Length: 237
Image (cartoon, rainbow, N blue to C red; front, side):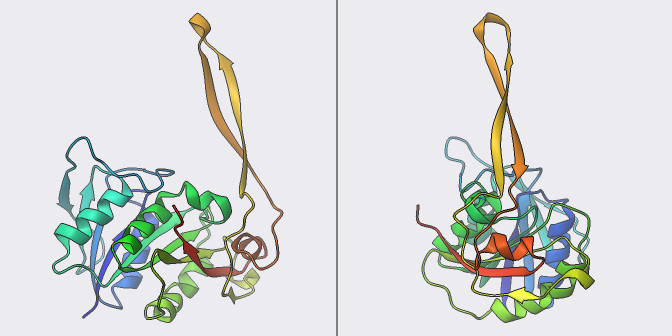
């Protein structure tokens, strides 16, 4: 039986994690190792200067063993692969992230960072993300189908499958687009709100605005046009 390790960056209680574990359980034995709380935008960071802790928790999907961890998502993959899953997993799934992981945002994403850690460990990996909304009809319709399709599709070293689901009603979804490249553009155009504090100090609070322009053939263009985007992302760092 396949052994599947699942993590995320939204935390052990995230709805997307539960939905992914439920779908994955149709394909093998599932372990979850996920952060105890939100760890977004931590990229591929790992903990070096102090120990990390993990503890088994109750999980709402029958047959799934789940552990919360006080480290980063990449830490979760490392201890899951090296210590928790007996004999190492055959696959790692990361997600389902609350918010797209497309374009240049991949470099910040801890969903992608965890997936790239698994790829570094030479494990076949799929990252799943969806629009940051409560509309999950498209994800729920295509999730198992895409898992089945990608589970045995090979990847080169340091590559992951990257899947993004649009946040539209199922009736508005136009289907699945494969071989989407990672857009070189930005999903969010950021700026910092500056506030002057005492003693010459200044605070900077990030504020992002969605960019709705994307090049044809990219992941960003696909989700903007209500397609499921499937493509390969490569860790070049």
